[in-house]
Image 1 (tube, rainbow, N blue to C red):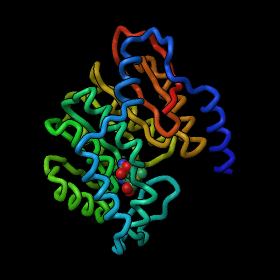
Image 2 (image 1 turned 60 degrees about the horizontal axis):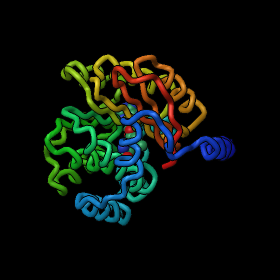
Image 3 (image 1 turned 180 degrees about the vertical axis):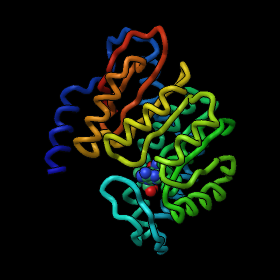
Image 4 (image 1 turned 90 degrees about the vertical axis):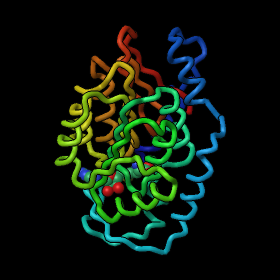
Amino acid sequence: MKKIFLLFQYLQYKLKAKNLHGTHSAFVYEFYQKVIQGDREFYDFAPIDHLRRKLLHSDETIEVNDYGAGAKRNVKRRVKDIAARSAIPAKEGRMLFRLVNFIQPSIMLEIGTSLGISTLYQARACPDAHMVTMEGSPKTAEIATDNFRLLHANHIKQVTGNFDETLPDVLKNISSLDYVFFDGNHRKEPTISYFRQCLSLASDKAVFVFDDIRWSAEMYEAWQEIIREPSATVTIDLFSCGLVFFRKGQVKQHFTLKF
Ligand SMILES: C[S@@+](CC[C@H](N)C(=O)[O-])C[C@H]1O[C@@H](n2cnc3c(N)ncnc32)[C@H](O)[C@@H]1O
């Protein structure tokens, strides 16, 4: 059933996706060229690629307490399987790096650390930013800590616990948000709830990135609801993820772009 849903979604995306010729938005045009189409090789990519390969060959097994959609609680999982299934693919991680590099946020939040691969792309793109990343599974978070140490990204602040309990506390200590990566608990209600909680803190230059918007029919419904939010002026569908901008003075517009 999920395969049929994905195939249908993919065909629809392929029919709609454009590469932006003739857009009237100078901002979206520049963003598309520099971030989505960008192919510059940054020197930060090699150590992350190396770390990913190391994790994919790990023989370690850990106990994972996963609160996410479709997962069992307290199961033993091989680190290599977590790296293969949960870590962001390199193409998307590199795009997140360019995105963060483009917007230069002061404060970044990631909801869903796992082993820290996506965290590292984002944190290394803007090392002076204050980065907070959140994870529910303590053993998984410990491996992420080791990975941050290994890649000298000790400035990343980790928060461990169920997002439903930890997110309100994290947000209490943040005055405004420039960047949020939503990549955990892929269900409709929690995704909308985390979005609404972060929305009130979104700065004018903020970008919210939602991963796996087609993970399931209910995740796609959540994405459709997010697009309708009036303060979300520019929204971009890249198939695997969706981007949301809150730039004031911009006409509300949705784009489905080739990536
Ligand atoms: C898809 S993985 C994150 C992958 C990571 N962003 C990357 O690309 O490298 C999602 C993570 O969210 C965590 N998670 C899911 N639901 C959660 C919840 N309700 N509270 C805390 N953690 C949760 C899982 O343990 C999992 O490690």
